[in-house]
Image (cartoon, rainbow, N blue to C red; front, side, top):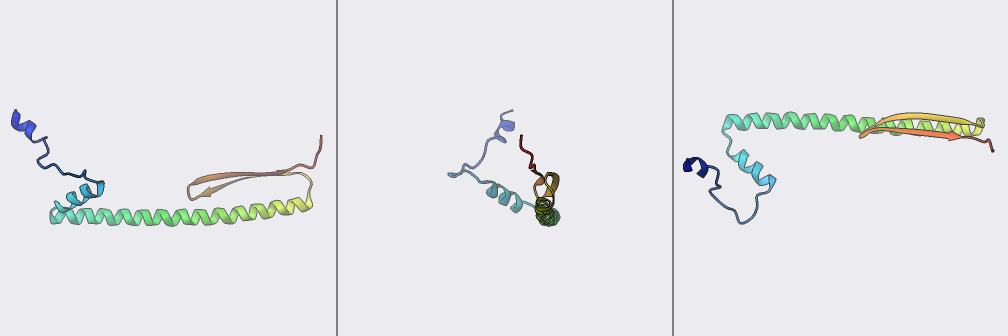
Amino acid sequence: MDDENDDLIPQKQSLFPLSADDIVDNALQSLDEHQAREVTKKAADELVRIAVEKRKAEYRSDRAQDEMRNLISNANLLDEKVGDYKINSTFETATGTTSVEIKKSRRTH
């Protein structure tokens, strides 16, 4: 029974606490060749996934900026041509969605 509990006690105590990077480095160093190849493949797949998501976010951001510029331009045209207007628009951005409302009313009460 005592032998089972001895497995839970750390064998070496470091003077400095281990960082997350230290733990990952130690784990990677203890992998055999097959495990190392598998981890490398998974890491490469994850890097590709992150790069694709980054590219998609950049595209959404660029498109949203263009659409917002067009919305402002249209509001400026309406400003010159009509008295009252209200424009509602929603844009998909890199981090979510943005809703915009532009309105103008020349009525006075």
